[in-house]
Length: 239
Image (cartoon, rainbow, N blue to C red; front, side, top):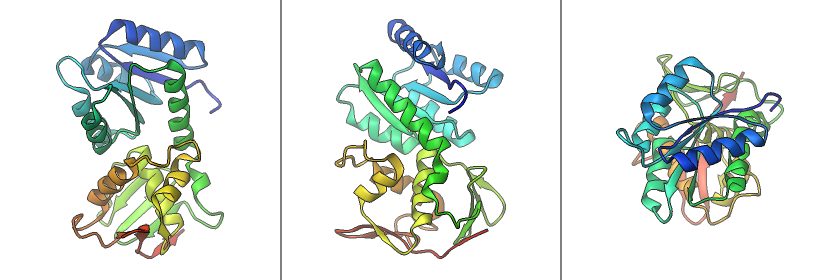
């Protein structure tokens, strides 16, 4: 990215919040810290934020609820902070639309690396597409606008996508009619840095199906190929 990324840290633990804000500011980012959802919304109304770091355990409105509402109204990437060993929080966080998660206690260097990776995916999503693809991709009753990062239905209504959902859908649209293994999808979305046993791809596919399938329990667009991975079966046309 050419400009310094603006990061909002939503964390009620003062020591953790100040540590993260200071570390990010020392490493080329513009970080602001707040303690709860109300303060977060006040910041979002005033300035443009490139990424939100969101603690699960917040006073008042919890982080999972905040993440869900953020995803309903914005496409700002979210990295969740979860308690060590709370696997259920991580899974629910992904279902709510989080782009990544990191467990406490964490190394600030790892958090910085994850922030850079998520921002890179958001701003370099065009690398997933083939050179012949247009900015609008039609499939089933949907249109994906690559330039606006928007998914629009047949009635012209926008279906909000997280950056992870957008990248996953674009990966499928770039390879229609081909069986893609979990490992291949992870490579397309995250690159080789990701651990190959990461099962978060299944959660993202489940979430994406809920948005584009008429019946997510009987998917016709993103089909499961047992033992092979996933197949995007719809015809894709680009403009």
